[in-house]
Image (cartoon, rainbow, N blue to C red; front, side, top):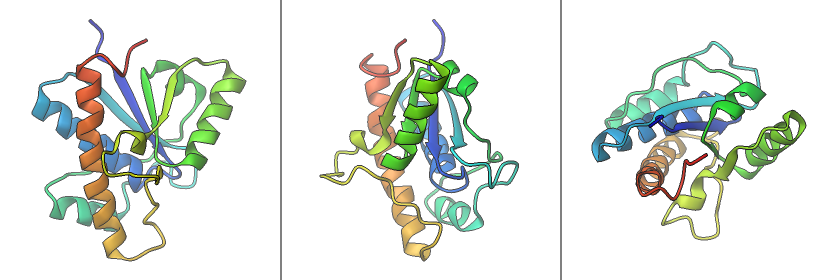
Length: 161
């Protein structure tokens, strides 16, 4: 069986989506689920750059290691993915537009739709322009949600083609 490919997407691929990539990998390892996890951004501003140092620091303080460099999402990466997770509604709209134009049929969802504590707030807030507490909260939120996502993939409810 092919390992499901999960793509986490935010705006610049330097804060939220690399954190989700690392947290999804961590949850998959803990739960014994084989996944190919990737991340990208809808914009190209940070392509080739590592994750934001503030995000790396907040993640490391919670035992999560961020690596890699920013990439921009394209039709090929959408088409290759079994599940695409948008960090906010704006990202979701951009991804749905790209998928429509490229005629790609991929399961694109809001990441926090799977957060048991989301309530009515479906966005992972972008901590880029805020203070350190925002980065810490994003790591907590993303880790909690990642575990739920991986459990749903393991049960067969998500990540199928």
